[in-house]
Image (cartoon, rainbow, N blue to C red; front, side, top):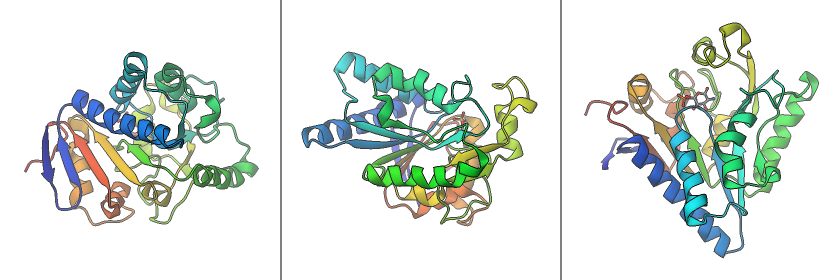
Length: 254
Ligand code: GLP
């Protein structure tokens, strides 16, 4: 594993498997330390292909090394709107299958925005989500992937630094990237609920994962583009405890 101090964000260039192990180890240490102190660990979690090895490793730590998730509270970054919660492509279904059921987390401790909230209730639902995060004590570690267009969560280009959990319209590239999973672009939802940039930046630690050549350009821009809404991931440079795990294909040329 090579650590490079980039101008703004510490980079860890390694393999996806080693990145998964390193981040899982960090989460396990936090969970165990909080358990000893009789407290919860609060994790912010993403969906997508990128965190799959991390979720596999957390499941392995639970199965083989007794890592107990009884004192873990999770908040997912985002969720599609206009899908039944049990829809196979909802992020709720994804998280159940890829992590929650494998580590025995209490469903009452695993929070996601609702995918079926009535239009008139969306704002109240988003405010309630922020209140639940605060009531849990705030997010200790936020895990993030990166969209090819620089989105974090579903904070698409144009998202403001002060944004909080809210309804958003998905960008064309984001919908196109999801089309295959939904069996065609027409089936991809147009709206979602996402934590805002300010919600993400309020986490005490942020660990970003990006693997493969398709992420190389967005990683490069995240490190050098002007900080601002044109590339929401640039806002991560403002955070005091962020680390970016890359494989060699995603790493910018040095
Ligand atoms: C999705 C999610 C993001 C995720 C990103 C990258 O749209 N809302 O939270 O980080 O796209 O996905 P992947 O990891 O599959 O490349």
